[in-house]
Image (cartoon, rainbow, N blue to C red; front, side, top):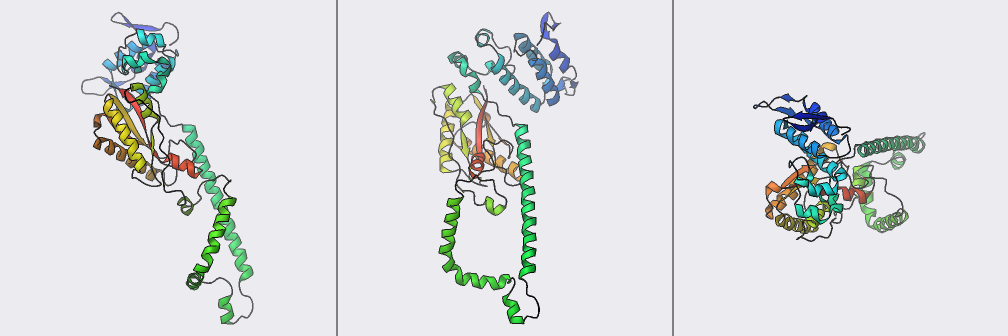
Length: 370
C-alpha cells in the first residue's frame, strides 16, 4: 500500500484501506458477523495489493478480517488463490524465512513446510500453480467459431446454387419418352442403391487409391477444424500421450511439481480411462499417500466440439472418474476435490486434430498443504 496509511485498533496498526473495504459487508449470519462476498473480496485484494508488496501489516489486517468477518466459499477460494499468487510474486525471500506467518489463510508460507521453503526459494512459484481461464482467449475462440459457421453457411448456399444450375442444365427437355426420361437427370436413392452394391467391389480398390492420394496431397496442409459431425468423427479415437514430469517421491517439492504438471488425456467423447491413464494415476496415488498433507484439485476439460452444456457435463464426469479411481487406490477423499471446466480452458488449438486430442484431458493442481 502507498504511504503510511494505518488505522489503530487496540494499540495495533492495521491497513485502513482494507478495513474501509470490508466495512461495506452486511451482518447476515446468526452470530452477527458480516459476510464478505466475491465482489467485496475482489475489492479487498485490490486494496491489499496496491503497494505491490505483501507486508506484515497487510498480513495482520487480513488475520483481523478473518477473525471478525465471514467469507462465502466463492470469496474464500478467490482471496486464498490471489494472496498465494501475489505473495509468490512480491514477498521477499529473506522475509519469508524470518517472519512467522500470523494466519494460515493470509500467505502461502503458512501452508508450506519450513524445510520446503528453506530448500530453494527460487522455485517457490512452481510449488503451487495458479490456474485461471483467460477470458480474452475464450472470446477469440468464440469469434473463430462464428466465422467458421459463416463460412459453412456460404459454402452450403453455393452448393445449393450449383445444384440448381446443374439441374436446370441436365433435366430432360422437349418430348421425351418415359423410358429415356427415367435414364436422364437424377436417379432416386432406390435406383442408386442396387447399382452401388453391384459396383462396390470393383470400385473399392480405386476409391482406396484415390483416398491415399488425397491424404498424401493434403498431408502438409493445416487442419482448419471439422465443419460437420462426420468430419469430427474422423478424429483419432485414441487419447493423446500422457504428460508428466520425472520426480523423486521422497522429495515434497519434486512430488508437488509432478502433480502440477500431470495431464491424463481421454479419447474422443469418452469417459473411460486408458491403460496409460491408469498407470499414471497409480503413480499419483502413491505420491498422494506418501505426502498425505497435499490438497489437490482434479480438473476435467474437453475440446470445443459439441454444445457448451454437453461439454461441461462431460468434463465433470471425467474429473469424477479420476476422483473415484484415486479413492479406490487408497487416497483420502479429504485430500481431493473434482471440478469440470468444459471447453473453456484449452492447452492447444481446437482447430487441429492434435490440438483437440490434447484438450480432452484431466489435470491436477496442489491447492494447499495442510
